Amino acid sequence: MTDLPLVTARLAKRAAEHDRDATFPHEGIELVHEHGLLTATVGARYGGDGAGLARTVDILTALGAGDPAVALVTAMTLFTHAAQARQPSWPEPYYAALLASSGTGPALVNALRVEPELGTPARGGLPATVARRDGDEWVLTGHKIFSTGAVALSWLLVWARTDEDEPRTGSFLVRGGSPGVRIEPTWDHLGLRASRSDDVLLDGVRVPLDATAGLTAPSPDARDAAGMAWNSLGLTALYLGVADAALEWLVRFLHERVPTSLGKPLATLPRFQTAVGEISARLTSAHVLVRALAAEADSGSFEHASIGKLVGTRAAIESVQEAVALVGNNALTRRNPLERHLRDVLCARIHTPQDDIILAAAGRSALSRHHDKETTS
Image (cartoon, rainbow, N blue to C red; front, top):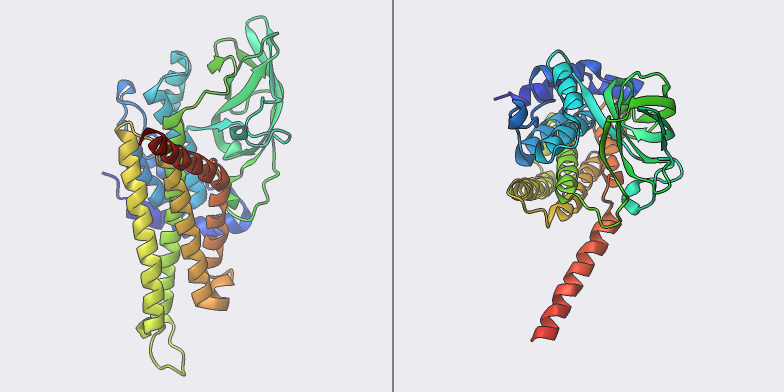
């Protein structure tokens, strides 16, 4: 079993440096690979450990506490392997190639879906990225944004539509560094700066005709409940890890800070003890909920996963914000990590599904249940 606290500590040593310079944490990804975490979710049928969502939540919590940019990049690859284990969609030769390269070094994968005009596809619409058939190849042209880890990806899963009379959509498997793939260094973000979620431009990128995954006619009813649960709870775990790191720093600060007017550490004051207790209780509750829902997902139940994201990310954000309020100016000083934790944890709000979607769905479900009870009583 990997020593996750050790990995957290080693990642944390360079997290501030990469955040400050907005440089990709290659050595952090190497560390994750060396500990077998990057391929933890490879299915048993492929010779992997087949880690479920509950184990993945533990991994991403630990990585998020050390360097959330490393955690986010790792999450994308873990989710890809987990999806292949659940329901294979990669053609066998291509997935075998991914596994082979994973044996010699980090092999990162990410699904590139977001576009400048479309925004997130979770809210509907077809991609502007087009795949045109040319003999025994597809030729891809398009523009993807917010492409996490773009500079280091071994495989890009490019969501596109075909130019057929009746378009199909799916992922086209593009090797990193393929001719026609250009990375635009556009990522200049408040948080997760080292994730290098840059733009990817595809100009006549050629892939073999069979290098596709899930290429089908668009369906508004298509819904991958398992994939949504992994995304919701896995990424929530990452941000709870950030909040854990913030709480750890806060506790250390309160023990070390001894105002001359007080003559003893701030940690001895009831006001700070109560405040830390509030943060600890909030985070403990969120961790328990997310882990429990991850275990439910592993058993095939995904009903409340998005609620877990809502509750968990709110708990993470509120906890870090409260830590900042307690500390004051020292919290917003760049030499202290709390300022970085605040910027990073705020990124929890942008991941799919967003809060308004979650709450609307929860409201419809509750209203429907109440109505059904009224009509049958």
